[in-house]
Length: 405
Image 1 (cartoon, rainbow, N blue to C red):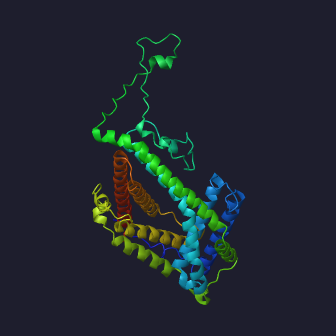
Image 2: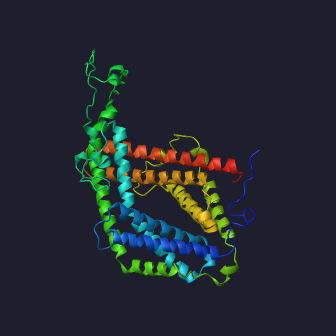
């Protein structure tokens, strides 16, 4: 018999550990505001500020990620618990934090999207070498700012790394391990098919095209982020967050109001959004639903992805609400974590497929290049499908194991 599930936001679950007033929200917001200011100071010290040129260093990237993390949590908490806050102040700062988080995320999204697509091209074309952009042996190490040359994807020129023939009698100077080690026969390489040959021919040019387009997009995103961090709009946000670190404008009734019903409402919105997803179809791997509906000539994202992106957002809001209730003692729900990771992969794959489709619309590209981009698009739509299947498995496991719906 399955153990009866207790709601993490239920006051009867752990009355001594859970906060009971809006002061818990105030403490959480003060902590996140402090993290925001610490990350901002680190970002400026590492040269990632508006006047610096070191935005690609590891410390600056980590600082930008911490800025996004705290901005998302403050904005999400203001959305979930807005009845406990001063309405004018909350509605003024919340969209500004969302703007900042989204602006800072663009550069990282372009870089990770390029890495994902080049690795997928390498895998699909059957090349024996890793693209220069990914392996770090060329000009595009780490930052995703490769030169966009034909070496961005080395799928068209696989290296021949056949093992040398083993002599029948080893030299007397050979070590004992070399004399006694069994010789494993390498499996023969896969015989190239006509389709694989066409893909191999176009993979290098497709990779170079993606490299040029996404590197340009990343450069623009980096410039946009630097301009945003130096703008008066950002300084106004930073000033409000600095005040938030010491004083939270709570509503007059917040001191005696229990925040747990608001967290429960956030969980219910998540549950309702998941119930609207086609989980029955997603429960069957390789059902081709994501691929068929992803072959639309419309350059805009297909509307079938939007409900899954909305569930991803609601899942984050639910997690942030649990952090507000539990503070530093927030329990780690592995099932929610795995479901969130599946939705992150879904978002990444769908955006990568859209980037491949956009590159395929480039005028006057070679047929082999267009073919490689079409195969890449289909591959990423299959990844979308696999992510939906993984989310369905995680969510159903949560439902069965905990007794919730």
